[in-house]
Length: 319
Image (cartoon, helix red, strand yellow):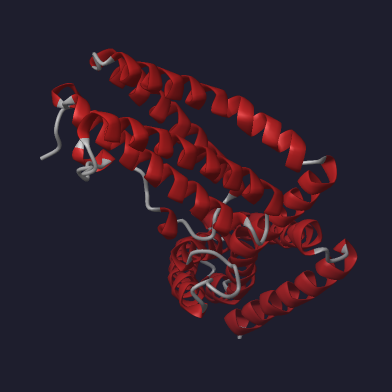
């Protein structure tokens, strides 16, 4: 059972402060290590903040020794009620730069409030002063971070980090999403239009389209998640990639299936054809925007493949 903060003794408060500073320093070190490859300037900022936390810990240990001796009991945040639960850094892979910066801001705010409350509970004057000084130091960490950003995050460095951030976004989100969208939009054309032209019945085409879209989504989700764990390729968490790929596959097939909610077969088919054209143009634009493929070439590749599958579906359905 976690203990209430108000029930902590002054010795326990100091021990908790020492443990917290050590934890924060190690978290900042993990941030720096995780960001070093793609965001070296921001990694350096977290190295500087790690050094600050180590200095705070040293001062706290000196004060603890002065009052209570050499043995420092192990009291951690999770042993005390009121602290925010933090997801272990080693589970956050790959690290997003904006997520890490927000996490650091939350850490500094929580630590500052802890020192302010701790100072109010402590009666010993030197200890009270130290805790107050540390609360002020945590408050100034925002200024420290700003100064370090000005020192390390020059315009050129920021441009490089934004480029790295975009590259990771493409690897982890755009690529699996685009693969799913292309598969869902193109591969489901044949069964949907084959069913439509074989039966001339909107309801039958709708059922086939829904089955093909959901089935393809599930299949692509598992295939993408099982393709690699992202540890070497930097493509991110398999679960996230699988979800993105599966959802986009289903969305790609659902788009030209929903028009068959319209009972009139000819009207539904005409609208479905328009939707297919829009889907193929959207895929071409995404390839141009994120994959640096010239739009005309992307459109030619996607549209030719889509038209061929579309014609196969009509041919089979009409035979």
